[in-house]
Length: 322
Ligand SMILES: [Zn+2]
Image (cartoon, rainbow, N blue to C red; front, side, top):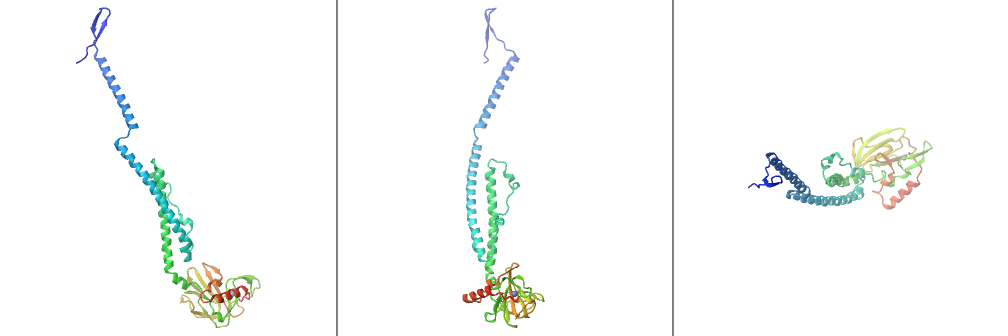
């Protein structure tokens, strides 16, 4: 029921009915609607900004759970890295040393990873840093694990080939100890022909023409040649593992290029060919292209006492025959 309003007319001194026009009624209705809209919007704004919906609450809980899991994951990755570093250390300083393999350089172990582009998809979130860092750590761990497993494969192959390696690396004298005397050791000395101080890159075993010369390790003959101004008739054996040995000034060569030889096998005889001032065998050990002191490779067929004598002879001997 519509309420009827009255107002007092002072001229007629009577209460008169107030008649409200359609236009005014419409304005009143619109006013109410506008107020309702404004309050409604205000209420919704407060609800949206200050209170979570059940779905939002659930998502927020899920994010907290995920952050927690990410933290645990990071710690586990760090722990795995520590274990891996220990393995790398043992590999570089024990296993690889045993098999005479060089340690794996730090630069290879820490090989480049990631790049900003790779993690672009993870950059736009509140927890981007956590996600990117964890992903990077995991990726680094994967790379390091790969390098380490490759190294173990290599070490395993070296271990399997250890027997072959021991048989191959030069480890005896090319002449029997009874058949020779060390005339000159490795190092600088006055050259017997040029009379100037020159590097003597091997050991001279003074002996007699025709005394047998032995291969000092298993290998393949890679050079049989004559050099009138140098080594004369000489033989080079490739032993693998970076090792070669050279035998110079021979009177006779009893092997041919490409032939496989065993340690101790006779490859020729002592002579005086090439730049030589007397019958002797000039013997060299070459490792990775560098001539090194053969004195360190005579340990196999000598007793400790004999080895001591050889070392003394080699250090005193300076009568080089070249
Ligand atoms: Zn020599």
